[in-house]
Image 1 (cartoon, rainbow, N blue to C red):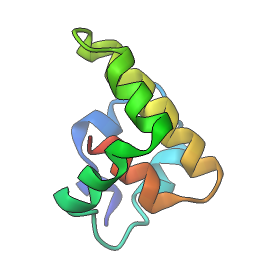
Image 2: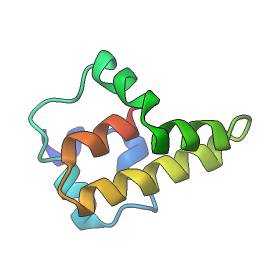
Image 3: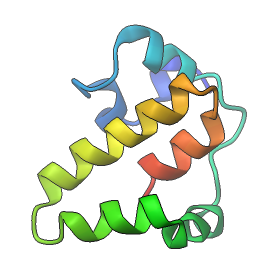
Length: 85
């Protein structure tokens, strides 16, 4: 993916620095909706999704923080799955 093709919520994120955004742009293809749905049962993801019910702004920030953790562990695909929740 080209850097310019990053979704606005990634480009405008204050959680990701420039290097994070460049790393996110290196993905060949985005995960499918089915791929994304599969991670919702993981304990850390399930807990995160339920912690911020009714507060989408905080939820999005915490999902981006979780995605950043995955990026730091070189798990690009997992980072994208979290971002697309």
